[in-house]
Length: 162
Image (cartoon, rainbow, N blue to C red; front, top):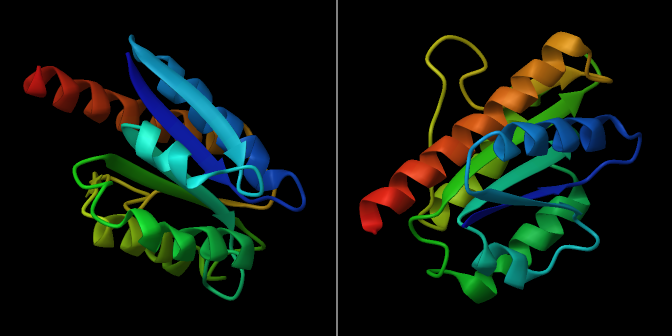
């Protein structure tokens, strides 16, 4: 059994809705267990225990939230131990051209610095799922696809190791 943890920050509930949709997508892949955690409840051990880590944050001034950044900053204690795990990111923002892409990149930078594997999308939403305010039906489908894509890559890589 492979494990994915979805760690998110949400003050309005929009990013939390996205996190739950991401988890639904990951659960579609056979042999995947998913934990969804608000960043305030997340522990470094959650990162170590997971084969895939998906981060979610509202967009604040083109960056992830302070609470998620603080958690990521503590991950220096496990630096080198997340190498080879699969990662992904999602964000909600207040409008178009409000920094969603740079927010996604800020989360992906942290995952890449840990030596994690990140798979982009070739057709649209290249860096991860990004929505404006509360996710609608199409937005939720993007989140489900993100979760399923990360879980599929976790499953593929795990099968190649074994």
